[in-house]
Length: 99
Image (cartoon, rainbow, N blue to C red; front, top):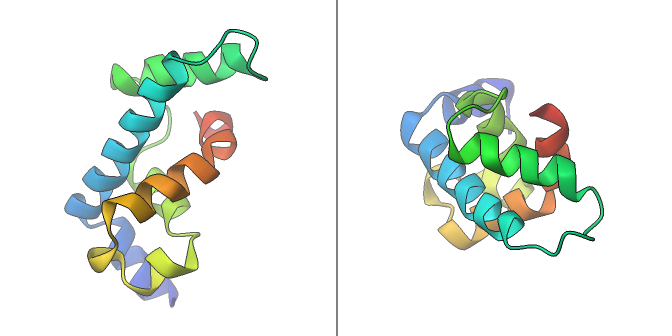
């Protein structure tokens, strides 16, 4: 994916919104985790912040992280919700680190 195409996808508000919804779903799952899950405190903090709209990462930054997946990057507007969720779940540690 070219930088121009990546920029176009990352700045598309609909794509950003879909990525954010995938983060919300992941956050709800994190809040249901056992407290002995590795990095639970950080994960719970991220989950709470994103559900309250207080995350440090912008929607554009989240979208860029989702676009790390080659399948999604090949056709961001055609990506199915399950692929977006899979990618968010796969990079949750990175999203938590970004904030």
